[in-house]
Image 1 (cartoon, helix red, strand yellow):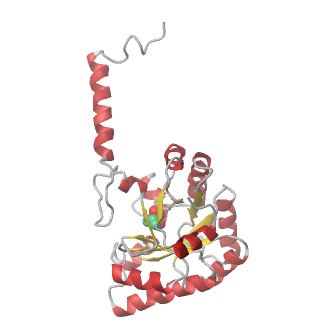
Image 2: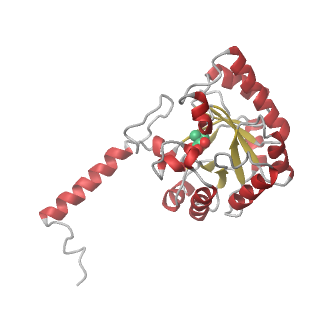
Image 3: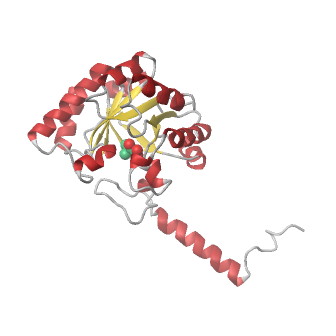
Length: 264
Ligand code: KIV
C-alpha cells in the first residue's frame, strides 16, 4: 500500500504493479481499506455512477468534496486522490488553487486533472504549492463532446505523438503519476518506458505500471455498461438482485423476521 507520492516512484523503480480503484462512499471505502489495493481515486465518474448523470461534466467541487470526505473517513490509511471537476482547473491559477484547497482539506493526499495543454501554469503552480498532481491523458472523459463520443485515442501517428509529448510535459511539470485511458497498448508501453513516473492504465493494456478500474465496473454492479477493458471480478448486480428477491420473498412468506430476529 502506498503512503505518499515517493512510494509511487519507488514502486516503478522496483518494477512492481500498482492497483487502484475508484470509490465514492464511506461503506465501500471501509471495505477497500481492508484490501491490499495501493490507492483510491475519488473520480469525477461519481457524477455518473453515484448521481446518474450522463457524463462527468456534471461533477462539481461540492460533489467531489463530499465524496472525498466520506472516502477518507472510511479509508483513513489509504492514499486518496480526488478528481478536479470539469473546468475547475481552467479558470486560472487562483480558482484552481481554491479547488485544490477544498479537495485536499478533506484529507485527500493528491488531486487528478485531465490534460495538460493550456493549463501547464496551473499544474506547475499546484505542484510548487505542495499539491501532488496526478495527470490523466488519452481519452479524457471531460472532453467527450469535443471527441464526439467516447473513442480510443492515440490511434493515428499524430495523436500518439501528441499523447507521448503531453506525458513528458506532465512529468517535467512535476506530476507524480499519470492515468492513461483508452489508448493502444503499444503506445501505453512506449509512454511507460519513456517516463520516470508511473503510468496507471484503464483500457491501455498490460504494460502500464499500474491499473485502475471504476469500482462499480469491477464489481459488475452496472449491467448495462461493460467496456472491453472493464473485466468484471464479481457479478455484483446478480448478487444484489438475488439478495433483494430473497428478502422480498421471505417478507411476503412471513418467514422474515424469525423468532430469533425478534426482541422478546
Ligand atoms: O473518474 C474516474 O473514474 C477516472 C478513472 C476512469 C480513471 O478518472
